[in-house]
Length: 317
Image (cartoon, rainbow, N blue to C red):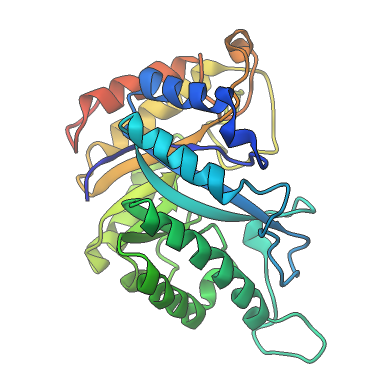
C-alpha cells in the first residue's frame, strides 16, 4: 500500500453542497496548502437514535446525492487526488455513533442487531458499488462503531458481500484504543484507526498498536487523526465537545509530536487528518477558530512540510 498523504473531506455536508464552487475551491486549496495526495471523502447518513434500526440515506435532504458524490470524485481525480470513499453513520439526537447498541440476544418487541445490520449493509453496499465504479483505491466499511465491533459474524458477512461488488482495498476505521480489541482484522486488507491520542502518549500507544500490526501482517494507517486548537486540546484531542482559550500553538505542537513519533515506525503508512471542510471559514477567522480545522493556522504548514518530505517512512523532526 502506498503512503497515504491525506485529509478527511466533506464531513456533514448536506445535499447539493458538494456541487457548489466553494467545495471545488476548498479542494484545490487543500491540495495546494497541505501537499495532500489523497482525500477520504466522507458521506454521512443518520439514524434517529442509538437504538434505531433504520439508517436514513436514500434521497434524504441531509445526505449528499450520488450524482454529486461521483462528480466530486471526478473533480478530485482531475486535480491528481486519489479518493478513498468512507460512508459514515451519525445519530440524529447527537449521541456518538460508538453508542449504537442492541441486546446480544434477540428479544421480541425489541430492536435487533440483525435488523440494524440489514439496513447498514444496504447502505454500505450501495457506496461500495460507487467506489468500484469510480475506481477508488480503498473503501472504508465503517467508522468508530465501538459497540457494533463485537458483532464479528455480521462484519465478516458484510466484508464478503462488499468483495462481491468492490475490488479495491477494504479497511475499517476503528476508534482510538480499540486496535487490539477488534477480533476480525484478518478479514480486511488494511487496518486503520482514529489517532486522537494525547500529545505525551504517542510512544505508548504506538507500541500497543505495533503488536496488532505485527500479528496480522497488514498495512496500517490512521484513517482519522487530529487535534483542536484550544488550550488542553492536545491532552484530550478526542473530545470534540470541549473548548477553551484559543491556541494554534497547541494544535501545531500536537501535530509535530505525532509526526515525530510515527515517522520512527515504518508500519505507519499515512494519515487522513481530521478534517478539511468543503466550505471553509474566511481565513481571517483562523486566528480564533477552536475546531480541528487547520486552514490558515500554524499546523497547516507543519502538515505541508511533513507531506512534502515523506513518501514513506523517513524520520521527520
